[in-house]
Length: 330
Image (cartoon, rainbow, N blue to C red; front, side):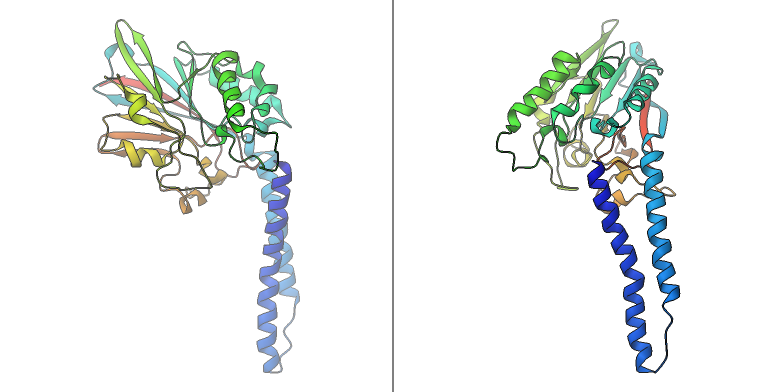
């Protein structure tokens, strides 16, 4: 991951250095036609400042920004929420990408402690436990086992959890076996309720809510190469009453949920808000229709959590997020 970041920084530095020099070269050729000597110094200093600024910003994102944490709390009201679940607290987390913490495991411990401090009734994890392989999760099993909620942890698989980004030159690698290992790690080792196109019913005083979970489902091909394994009709089979959908990719909400089902609340991840957010704007908007936070349409709600981990190890403005949702019987 650090190697990828260094390559990205070097490439960005080359681009930022080249832009003022190309402008100078074009201007110099024009000025030469009019026998005017154009000084290079202003363009050279501009190139130097741009490159230095890029390194400073990315150093901040790596050393400080990627471990800054926001805890966002909001109430969700709906008439279909049983009175027995009034005040029910859900902590929504996403995109752990556990290799993020290889150089600082204490930060993952801090995040887990912050989750537990919310005293959740249920923890919902919306996918991407790892980036390239199940072995990334193994050093963190003891920390992840510390996640506590009255009704446990529910989880789904995101695009990275299907190990589709591993270098294909490894002839000994079996993707299906790797996914099965990750499945077993969540179900059997961590004791999570992994939902793979299935549902999980929670009861209080004879009343129930249902958590519906699907494998990664992409409906628009937005973002980098992904995978489509979700089966919402199968996951919904036999369910009724108040339901919450866990789906990794937010494109699924507009593609199959809004106006096509009666699922009132959907929780997603995936976008990371591009790990950059400045004055409310994120470059994720270049790729995704919905980037982060809450969206309401036709009486249905989606929340996109920007994740706790990283694909490239830096965050600038788009801080790691824990979302605390309190259900309210309206």
